[in-house]
Length: 117
Length: 112
Image (cartoon, rainbow over all chains, first blue to last red; front, side, top):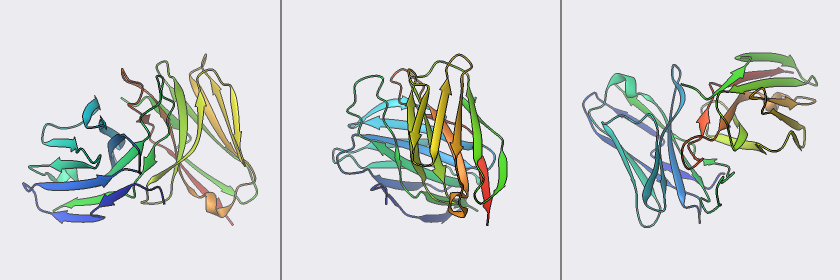
């Protein structure tokens, strides 16, 4: 058990809909990362938050947004869903308190399997 | 574009044999990490090697890093069926060094 909790585990929805994925990081971790894993794209970095603020942005679509709340949990919002958004979405956390160059390892949740029909 | 690229894409060996996976990357890094993913599950951190390190060991794992060639290798000795998984290398990128970029992975099958 990594200590990172993601809900829900599975989500089935229709095209055009909006969903919210939730992540609770390990106790004490300040950084949260979101990744999308699909067969054709592999593991794609979406976005990172550190202590409530966006720190790094990857291949995140404009239809997607995320935030990290004061209690450090994070939510990933996916809207106007398309068939191609079907994927496994992972949240990961790290301590986030190391000085540059950080050298921190990531702890991954078990993911949310999103199926868009 | 992918920062790290693992090679081979798939590897099948017998229990007891050694498994070697390679990772190549394109730009300067602060560290390189290896992760394991069992089918459909979250990734699990295996080992981190800093850019100023050349070799690191952890149990049956041995990781090497050659920054001049921008490559790393992961060796699993005396493999077991439980080692069957996908293995990913991840390199740090971005201004804050925490935009970890993962390669496409190597699928390892260890046959009993």
